[in-house]
Image (cartoon, rainbow, N blue to C red):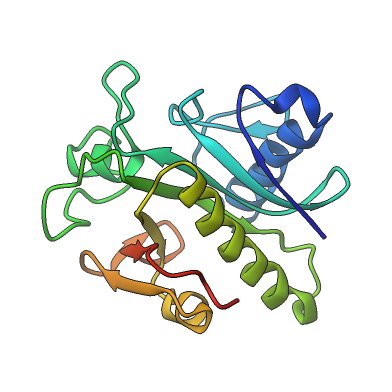
Length: 197
């Protein structure tokens, strides 16, 4: 099992990995979850997949097992900033409720958003936990390398099951909300300490 953090500067070094990550996202979010998201050439993408973001991938060769997108909360592209803030600003046509946070969404160079987190359903149940823990470890490591002190993410409401066993300092930032196919919640992850997973 390998891990790679991709950026627009490095995609040419990794063959099909970048495109395969978007293909894996399409399988997860559009085909399996049935979410109404942009797609082209068998890939899922949105307005937040810009040169400001980074994509952490867990993979075996070019086969993507899991991934997550990291975006600085200072990002701007046209009218958009980052997903959680734009939901709160009601720029996402109600696909994510605007009352997902208890306070205004942060704009801080030390705070990054983690979004589009997924683990492929092709992974046998016996191996899913290991892949999930590796993704969590690599997500926090990569965020630190980008200069982040904390992450915020909109994640399934079952987040304590996979975040807390890693020894991460995580706290809810808003209420549980129903989105598409399940309950979700915004979470803040402090990156002061290394994860234990």
